[in-house]
Length: 238
Ligand SMILES: Nc1nc2c(ncn2[C@@H]2O[C@H](COP(=O)(O)OP(=O)(O)O[C@H]3O[C@H](CO)[C@@H](O)[C@H](O)[C@@H]3O)[C@@H](O)[C@H]2O)c(=O)[nH]1
Image: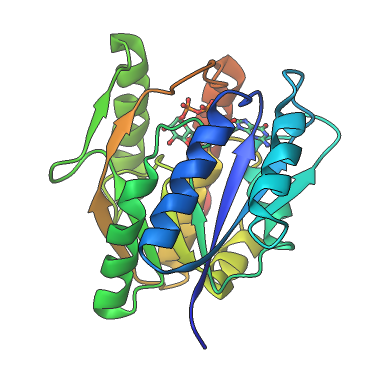
């Protein structure tokens, strides 16, 4: 059976970014002759993201764009869990919808996965020629600090625990999600830690993370507090 790649795109106020990211995803998959779909999980974005997504369903067809909606902003981690029920591919790619993650890296993730039949391939901003572009000093410090704290407490096996550009075998993603509790951004770190506990194999691909094209980050103080609480829970329990 040929592989099918399902991209989960969580959206909250991504009206401007969504058509561009979808176009580039379609282009990348077509050029590489890959079977693909995008599952959009929109949390009732006030900016009208859903209206744009509906147009994209018409444009690309229901086989390629699956729009799923929830009543309100329920958090990034729960969006992935929710999407999994609708995924048809045997591989799942998770990425941000704001263009921080460029679709052109996807063929590298796929090639890396095939090298050793890895369970997970994760993008890293903090190894090899990976990097972060466009963030101010404060935001860089938060990301570096979060990864540094985690590296001290959790003996990580990946260099970018908080990144969210990843490729999973679907059954692997389902098993990790089953044991993952986090609802917000800390979800990414917990997923990586749980993957190690479950002995799944992980490879890394360096990525250039570029600050979002349009709109604003949803990272707020509550997410930072959630991250610190989640880190402590993992440190004391895993
Ligand atoms: N459905 C849904 N989507 C959400 C929610 N919160 C955020 N998103 C979506 O999740 C993606 C990332 O959100 P941003 O707010 O843009 O995150 P960032 O600050 O730019 O990203 C950094 O932190 C993230 C969390 O760990 C990382 O995913 C990312 O790689 C980066 O390091 C975007 O597509 C955004 O619309 C939510 O509650 N619900």
